[in-house]
Image 1 (cartoon, rainbow, N blue to C red):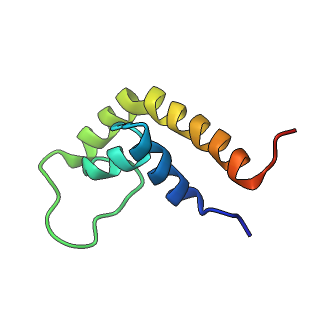
Image 2: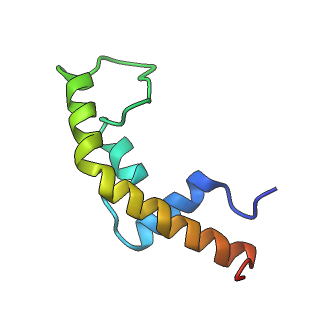
Length: 80
């Protein structure tokens, strides 16, 4: 079992470093590919916007993923 769930690690790192275009920022914008809205209406052109945002945020998402991986290693004590 992980010391800290991966999505929670994303929240901690992105919040602390104010990464507004990482995983949670992309979800917050409502335009994250692969997510399904379970309540309410989707914004007009949501699919197209999600695809465009995914391309635009790819670098930011990758950066957030790398930072979370480093954070996970620190939390887990795996420094080798």
